Amino acid sequence: MTKYFRCFKSGQYITAGKRYEIIAEVDGLFVFLDDDGVEHCWSIEPGGDGGNYRDHFILETDDKPIDGRKAEVIHPGRRWTSYYALSAKLGYPDASRDYGEDDRVHPKEGDVVTILSATDLAGDAVVHDGNRVYVVESENGEHHTFSEKGLRILSDSITVLPDESLGGIGREYREVNRKADEGETAKVIGPSGHKFSVGTIVKATSEKSAVTDGVRFINKCGDLVQTLVHTHGDYVVLEPTDIVHLPIKGHISGTERLRMVDRKATVGERVIMTEATGTRIEGGRSVPDYHNGNIFEIARINDGADLATSTSGKMFYQREYHVLEPLTDAPLLSEQSAQDQAAATISSLALRLGALTERIDTLEAKVDAVYTTQPTTAVGPEAVLKAVRKFSEGLKRSVSDALKTPQQRRDEIVERAKADVADLRKYKGTPIPNDTVCFRPLTKQTKDYVPMHTVEYVVNRNKRAVVAIIRCTCDGHITRGIAKCAPGDVFNAHIGKAIALYRALGLEVPADYLNVPKPTEVRVGDVVEGTSHSGAIGPVLEIGHDGEENFVIYRNDTDRRYVNKCWSGVTRVIILDDTREEVAA
Image 1: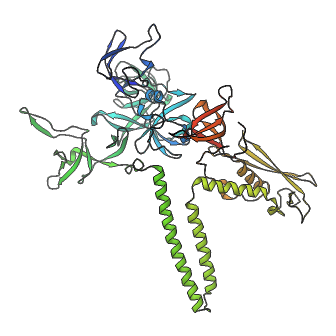
Image 2: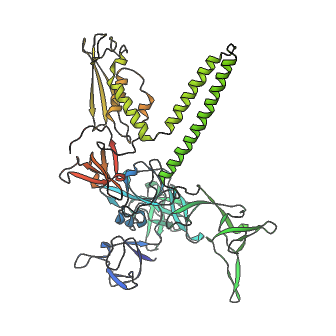
Image 3: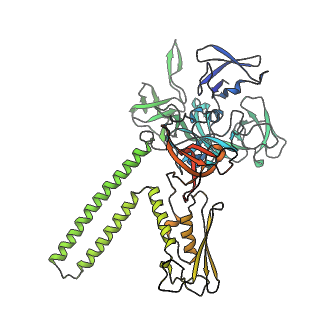
């Protein structure tokens, strides 16, 4: 097993992010070649000065298995950009970038990603600020480092391991909770009276176990045999699927998922050798011309002899290969920025809106002409014209709304909520649940009726709830309406007041209030939580740009003994409350 140093902290002759092969282990020292090809040694265990290789390096091997589980991004702000030490510990230093040099496409809320690593080389969880850390791969093959608070791990359990029968190409294995048969591969998932680390890949032996349902497993190195019981949650059997992972052409890192299909290939398709038998003569003897796991692109098919010829000139039969079919379309996000894609979408919608408007105007003109030349018809052209105009106006509004950004729609809903709460007169005469007196609110504009009700709002930001209290001044009757912000949503007191008022009056809450888009712009007054500074929470005091990225300065209401104000890049804060009331520095 080849071992490597992965550097996370640059030094005089080493570079952060670079990997160095360990060429020897001598007298408690790791020997490796530095940037200039000169041999250097680092202590394996702490020496007299307390230092060892762990001060600058993470130990890696070539056979660290891919986790393979799927996860949904629930908080994009919990993505850590430049934590090289964390991503290196997890075996993927390319999952970090220096500030200002991150050209990756950031995963969005709702995106499904593949977990590449959840443990270090020893199989232990990597934890930062009390939260577990993961390295994930997005659909376009880019790697990212996430806190566990930014992900929701899905139930599909897949492990990706090198398949030696395919030349070491990564293959997906389905995790199945059943008793393993002799020779089957398994993954340790629970520590229950054995010495294997969680995540260790083991193989079932023929050795009998005295434990009920127990199976004797051996690790890859062959130096440890232990009994595991699947009913105790010790392991899952890894069943091979027909899905393999291959490097993305033209990308430094990342893989694409392809399905191996047993069928005849067509010109231009890629195939993987699974039963290679082709030979060539070399040195007077027959040697293999290609091997299992070799990938070829088809240049020509000979139907008569059932032979295929690759672009490299290799010839083979259909029985020797499987066709590789991509599971997803080629990633396009790497070719365009998110801003360019949004602009293209808006431009397309605007063109469609223009075309629809032109067609509707033409239709209105035709109806007008019919009404002018034939003023009396059985159909009633005036009614038809009215219906066409009503339809056209509604269609224009619908398309116009589709062109608005989520932030614009949220702003409009907030303003509507403010207006609903401010103008109580429009609810006058509404029957109040469990009250004999219809709603007659006390307002500054009360002139044409005797007010009988006051409305009070109680806002609890800690519980993310608003209560509307309607109190009758004549009999003291109290009616309450409650609005609670759903987990994962952004709290807004104005929307909460409107929802609580509708519920207190027994009215149906408008659908817009229950399906408000999340804010996409951080603004002064928003209460945010930073993904750094140990999760400090407070209102935004200032927004600016430092030449590389937009930043926010927000007050630290979590623990002012740590720091009174926090600075953070705008992508590394999560909006919790956008009520935006006046705040003091």
